[in-house]
Amino acid sequence: MLSRRTILIVAFIAGTLGFSPAFAASPQPFSAEAFADAQKAGRPILVAIHASWCPTCKAQTPILSQLTDEPKFKNLAYFVIDFDSQKDLVQRFGARLQSTLIVFKGNKEVARSVGDTNRASIAALLNKAL
Image (cartoon, rainbow, N blue to C red):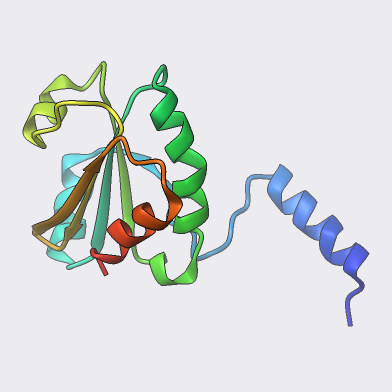
């Protein structure tokens, strides 16, 4: 049996080296091809319209990180669109503001929110994609 200290050391080393749980849905820059592949596969999808200067986006980031680490979101495709440099994609998704979160179930948009920093309501939003 491993001691608590051993587990903590292994967790620290894994975190330092950039390993994450196998079920974590890591954010990735939006790619039309990857988005289309996720839709064809019927995967749950999150598209986050993000701006680095946005305090609401900064508040959403750790919440989304915690939620997407949950095993139930292991198949979630998580895409990030930069509000400032990817205006064509912002328009494509009909986002008017940064901090917009859009969830899809396969090809269909099932919900969106703007400016939400409440963990429970963001969790509810993500659950709609499952």
